[in-house]
Length: 121
Image (cartoon, rainbow, N blue to C red):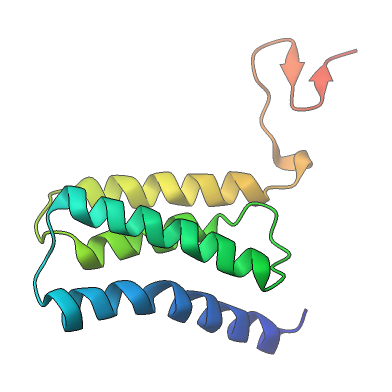
């Protein structure tokens, strides 16, 4: 995959993922939604995007970027000034994305006798 393909894929994924929340927030509702409404809309849009990208033949095994798009969609739709919740969600999403795409050689050891590849010999 070339750099141009990656840039095009990035723009395609994020523009499809954030178009619906932006239209809903700024053209349809014209106000911030309640937190529960924003979460419900972001979740349902995320499920719809997962189905759409699967039907389009996405080769991603985790679709972890949809979690990040869901967080941004929630921030677009939801109330302004929810404190540090967005920062905590962004950190969690970053950890999920990094660990989902990490090669097995970078997996840390879990406890004294176990590693990612089973018990030590």
